Image (tube, rainbow, N blue to C red; front, side, top):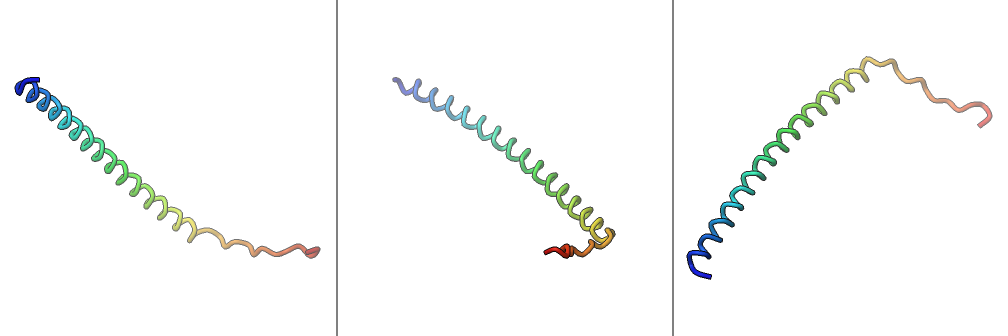
Length: 68
């Protein structure tokens, strides 16, 4: 294999690696965006749950039937 062929192979591999890095970077950014949305949704749901819990009627005390 000549030096020119080897150089061409290296350039091709470098181009593929650069493309892969770009794709991974894009996917990672998308994943972080989705994670941020999910964390925001979870926080909102937790706040709604706590608000509902505060306004809910107290639970009836659990008592055992007399035959226990």
